[in-house]
Image (cartoon, rainbow, N blue to C red; front, side, top):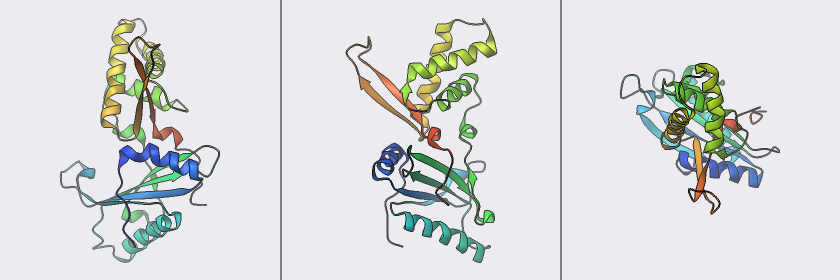
Length: 212
């Protein structure tokens, strides 16, 4: 298999736009060995590659599955993360899977909520972010999350305090979650000189058809 480009999560939004523009499907892999640190399964990245040819991507997927079946005791893999960019339908699709050697030809869709910190505001901010269907202003996510917070807490606390905590949670997503894409938009009409648009690529993870 020829050498392809590495998997770089911050480029995922651009890759999804490319798939949509070209009406193609492609994908990539990150292969992990046994954890170097107990409890941190992503601590031993062995290799990662993007395959811009659908044929190469699907061939690599099958080769990985077949190799691990034929070498159950010495394949050296703990798991693989699989990323799919599919622009062939009316709206682009992004799919994210976990694969382990014992799964054979099956894969497990990644639970995007699993990586959330155990934090009240983060949970509500993330729920509001994932309920969007397109990039929106951070303020839109915060206002939607505020309604959820009020539903849980009633009249406790001020709106300003809740909004500040929710904005901090969204900022943490932007800074730490590679699947959260943000873009600064300059606007002279905005009192702060502009605003930030934000989205989680998981909102494009629906109705996978790429294996059919």
